[in-house]
Image (tube, rainbow, N blue to C red; front, side, top):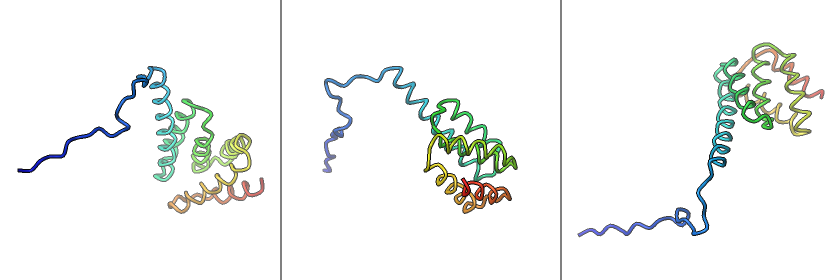
Length: 135
């Protein structure tokens, strides 16, 4: 006869006597954070699938949920760049660099490299890269 091992709850699943149920506010906050991240990541994926208008919409939804997530602004700027609006892309890039400081320029350049490595091509990428390097 085969005996099944006795089931034991993992330690993380055992509620402590002092544990409280999550509040509606904390659950709502978590949902907003998740939606923001999902829309931000979706906008990045749309860039690689050459759905630039959708990338803009997803980035804007993420920023509408939480405009302090400046990394999403890069996707918004890239969506303008890849649709041929270099002037608008530069405005977004400038705002991002003003908010996030020295690391922002490096992040933008890395994004452009990643987009090109992923097969995304546009004549204005080189112009944007040159402009960023001069900043």
